[in-house]
Image 1 (cartoon, one colour):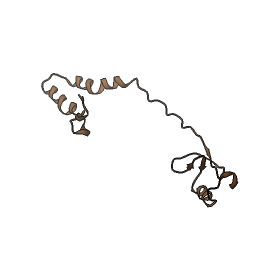
Image 2: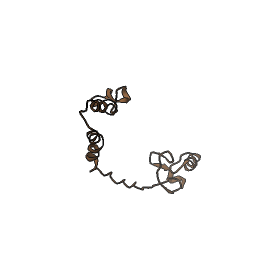
Image 3: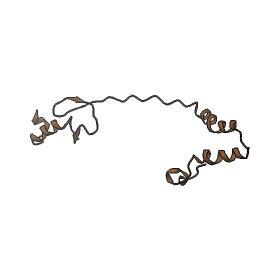
Length: 111
């Protein structure tokens, strides 16, 4: 079995494949284990262990929208496509440029 991180293939160990590559052939050679036992050990028991599990339903993505402080347009916030600074939200680079051209005046003066 795998007891430490060092035994995983990622870290240079034999990994879980050692069961199939070494353990099963050794047991088969000595006739300690039959093909039915191998099938039970590798296929049936793990399936039986996990057959109760049902993947959870995918959660709905909440749709919330922000309102641009410059053009008052509502938009879905997608990371990297909108900008915000302090309490000002820009829907894109056009509104950011527009506010910059106005000298970043307070919003009450720009409207």
